[in-house]
Length: 388
Image (cartoon, rainbow, N blue to C red; front, side, top):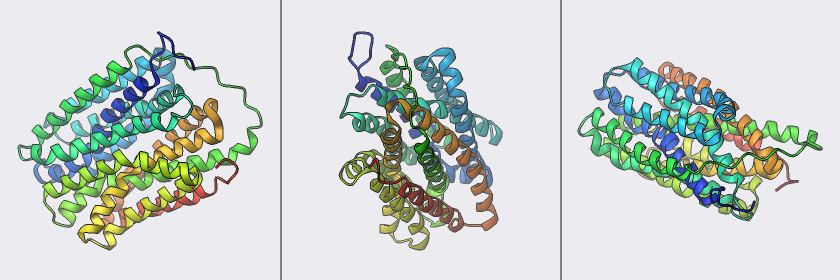
């Protein structure tokens, strides 16, 4: 694509996507994890209620992913993105009010709706206009926003929680507002019209690959749920570490997220996206299972860093979809992957909360996560060798 005065630079679009994912995923979703112990200890929530609030966010994600095409058609991509960012920020601000379980669950669910819209279209826009040789850079910029949000919440929240839950939620709303300002600035010039997709030819052989990509993405999102909801709770209430230690591990999780996209992308370039994707899934499986088998400090640090690097797996999945289906086919396939994973994580979120209550501990929940990542590795391995 030739850049014109009316076409925002690809890097600006990627920065806008990264800032939107910072607000939606990094702050809107992942910042909830270090809040769970404090909600149970100081906020009057039961462990089941705190877990259900997290599951509502995952369910809202599915609603947003389903709504995204209608919003894009009615308002255009840039306006739909601005609306999703505004809704997510409003949910962060509303969470400051200490008005109980139903209030927080409702607003966390609405934040999930905003995240669903942001996730579907941010990556598609960020990569669509990237020049040849910059596809990985565009995806990396976008996914780095998730890691920055996790790092900031991990560093800020322990200090803010010393002043209470209201201060912690207010701090998250403040950094969410700053990220929103960057995202709105980056997308202010608008987004170029979506090019008409090329007519499909010879698509039948790719049907199996699409099914495996969808399955791999579902297993990825299912495997991530234990760390998304229970990781810091496990460290603080399960193993007896301090809230500051929990926040430090969440910062390590964010550091893994910031570096994971680049490192896994580099490995994928060297050994092929297929092999790199299998390796990423295998590392996530080990990182999820290890801390319930070995609770030494090195194992916990390993888990925080390796599972934190999960955006790298997302980047490899999106790159594999682009590799197999091309620039024209990738957005439709990516949306199917996101929708399927949204259904999986919505059902899985509530199921794992129920499993946690039934089992009375963390081992079963993290075991399910490790199994899901293992099945994702099997699905990725079955994508074949023809395209890398």
